[in-house]
Length: 275
Image (cartoon, helix red, strand yellow):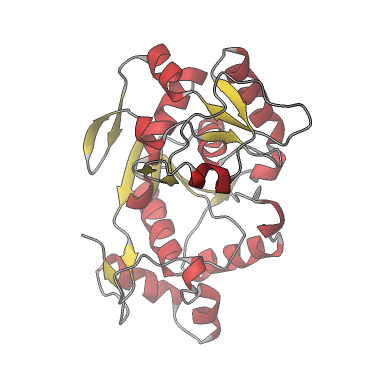
């Protein structure tokens, strides 16, 4: 059975880009007789606002979507700790005390997520008492897993290679897992078989596929869809104050008609699809 999911973070209101992603995941599941899940990714520290989860549910209902809700990330912290310990015991994680400014001062190369950590703390003893993150030793991870692949319904087969990201953070200073570790574990726990999300996360899948291999997790198929862009050619985003679904609801817009229009390519003025 096909199982998809929509996994928003309650650190801002949902916008049309979120609606687009949720509708695609919902319809792919329903067309194939499967299940569409809602998972609230609420481990972003003080930025997470629990009250926004109710707004998200109202948004999805307004769009005419039906879903099953699974436990939020804040209830799953133990599973992240267990997985991190497994990777650390296997010699695949190391502590890093470097700050962002210290990393930037080294003028490292730029990767898919910005500055690529140059491995300063790898093999070094970090002073006790310093706040640290735990980073994945990507070269060692690749040596363990060998050549592995993943499949995207749109782009086809890809060979997993997370090395352009460098040694990514899997456990943050404040404790909870990073997006890479948490989302990978959650998708496995929820039985997601088709990971549907925006094309901006395509390259992240290289990391997730390696984590699945290291942790012996089931391997789904992916579906990275096009993004909605504003009239400047930038993707819609919370940080850019893209108009919220709640505002559209409040203005009396018909959510079900909006969902139908999006799927038919009848995009609102000032909105386009990425190439």
